[in-house]
Length: 483
Ligand code: NAD
Image 1: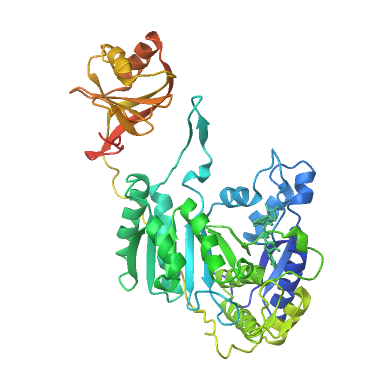
Image 2: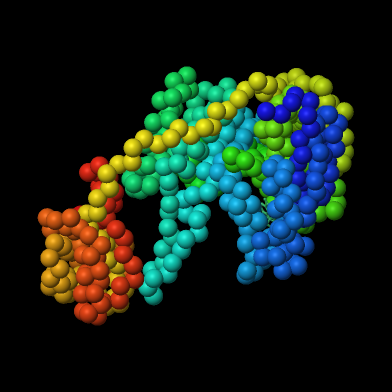
């Protein structure tokens, strides 16, 4: 635990486009508010990419991040074209930042919005799901992307959402998944949510299927408070949530890990607005407010947040949110920062003042898992590439494989059962899944090898296999549609 008055080292990157201007404005406000921070500046982004560093960050910058463990980052420009990797994804994954937190609140009537009472926080899982980027093209017609959801990964993000709710006096945590379709992956996330919710009896919890949940959020955001989601849904819906507050230019986000964290605006480097003293620094300032809370300077965060609310309320607006009526003065980046600095120490009169619990602690420790379940192999899915395939012909050959202890039980194509008793209307791609299950005895790796040898001898192009397992007797694999 840091001493109350100790200074926190922070790595800062000024980024590209409007980045340097909004960073300069943000740091001036932090300084004016007496934030106890020592900055280490690093260079990231376009110039580093152009030096041939494919992920946009040099080794010396990693050293600074590992040392300070806190990163305040302005947006960068990702060069178009091949070979460049997303710096954000690299930093998040390398430094284990598993939680992305994005508060989205409307400022009606000072910023125009259809949702005057919106105040939600999206907590997005940041490392798993399809973002492993594990993709394969296996046949001429079919490519796949692996969706990985882990139990510890789900536990960590869901616990984070509940701890965040408790620390910020939020009343409800909602979970969005698509577990009516992805019963095993999203089902794991949903089950973990229900389990962890039980440890927070004072916080209401609910689950929505993501499609109707997203529709409800876009229509009636005031029905939600904290929403926790797997990575892909969170990526899409956190932008929707920010946009419907009235402007993406206002939101900040935090990426939190066990050891390191990164804070930023949600928007990009807006190169067309660069160097003109036009950009709104509010998004990055909100990233900085989240940072102050995270490093134990909640009283400074509260002061900055309230001065910002007062500035917005006083109608001092940059071009992106300026509108006749509520706005009084159209200002540039520097003047906006000056206006916030002048209001440090004051609170909004009409908008609800920001309030952060100075003593709040989050208990993010993950309890050790219990005894692992009994895992048994029940069979194997053998995937083959066959262009002019016909399920009855494939089955006619495979049922003659004669590997004792195994039997062909189904053939499916893109998840739909086509044998036995397929429907003639089902479309057949060149990607076939042939399921062999145990015929009484334990299904071993030896069975798989013999099946693969038999498949090769029969001229099948095997592209992959997937093991079929049960866990404490519960099936750990999906059935094909129609099976
Ligand atoms: P953008 O967010 O930079 O800009 C979209 C629009 O919003 C622009 O028209 C701009 O005028 C406006 N805008 C954005 N921020 C603003 C601000 N603070 N004040 C006033 N107006 C603002 O999105 P883009 O144009 O798609 O991307 C530009 C570059 O930013 C790309 O290279 C992209 O890869 C990068 N990018 C970086 C990050 C990041 O570093 N985290 C995030 C998104 C995009």
